[in-house]
Image (tube, rainbow, N blue to C red; front, top):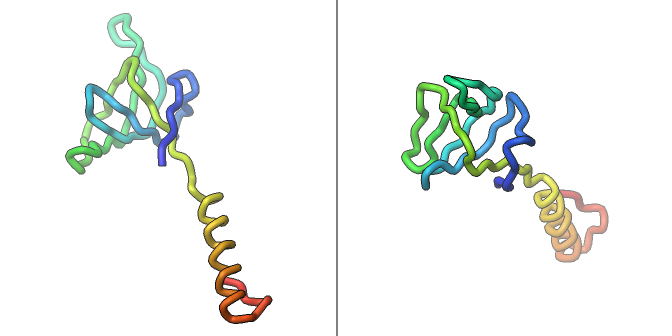
Amino acid sequence: MFQLITSDKLVVGTKYGVKFKGDDYSGVYKGPVTICGRNYLCFDHIYDRNEKEHLPNPFYFTNQIYYEFISQQPQWNMERRAVTMIVRRLLGDDCFEW
């Protein structure tokens, strides 16, 4: 799951989602670079989420929409706790743990 993030909050070495001209990519942020006086954000290990393929070269983005990956661990814990409570009631065993 991805959540919107501003470009000034990107952390080097972290994987992000990028929306670029209607296409969806994911890649690892390598840091800012300046080429011919223009500032870009460099991403490596680019994966085109529309075409389902890895792209070989780094990409340089400016003013795109960036998304950070959000772990669903808290949701998983909540669901596991709910299933455990239901199974305990069905079995009549207050010590059951899934």
